[in-house]
Length: 376
Image 1 (cartoon, rainbow, N blue to C red):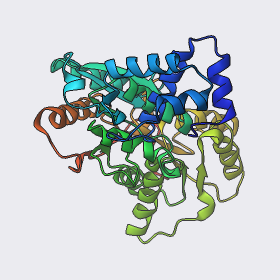
Image 2: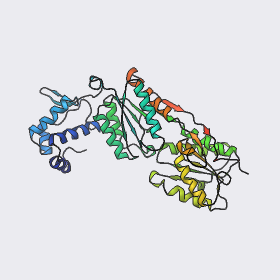
Image 3: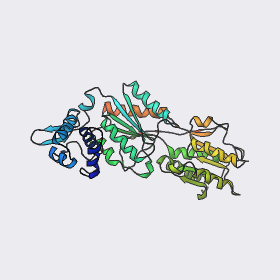
Image 4: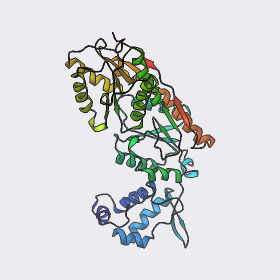
């Protein structure tokens, strides 16, 4: 983030918000984004005044409030410096607010995970501040900056599109600079050394596929969303289950898609597969949402589940039992995962646990229902 671009100057000058408040927000964003670390010296009032076209009085008011709020500190004759936001600043007022950032909040299994986190925190006297990214990297950054600006004492994050890298690395490092413990759920960015509470998704993909192989199926299609590591690992488990039985995987039976393609691409791919003379006899789905969507495609083809095609979902969500065909699915700990994440983060906060500890991994199991059957 540049200190002196014309867009920023115009933004500060033309906004309806008070100019001093806009400058405060800008400085906080520098700190929250890791541009300025604890101990770094801020530009002088004269420099800020010139760069943003503001009066010295306006700049002084912004700096003064940030000093009072604990973001900055003044040293006589030396200048203004970024303060460390951990320790006394976060606890002096009895702050026991934990931040949580997820890809979604109100959809699918996420309400259950959030309830688990909230229950685990509440039991120990902590509060929850919640934000979602809508599975967008830019919104993840906004959420991280908001959490730091709110002075959370710890942070639980579900990474956004974890298979596509971590462009917000500097913002995560800002958390570390300020001594804010970080824990991830469902997956972890490979470039971050923090504990993660997750399902063993490779094992989940393997047991789902093994369930179908044990029923005699040999032409099994796999549908996996691969812009997150959960889907990548489930796909790896799918391939591993075949390999363990000495069965080659037909690459045309492996359908990979990204978030934006989830509404159309899997459906179109299944229609094409079902029109083949050597069509698959079973399907492993990335999650229950996809499994329910693909049921419609099977009906369109005048095929029956499980007589003509077996389907297995993932997550054992409420959707698994919401249709007339009850879905076989791989379980997901949901609330238990949330509670475990809360417990581990509280341990890090209160016992000084190292962020490098491995976290916790749940072992998956298949929950058999009507949608899978032996091949005749």
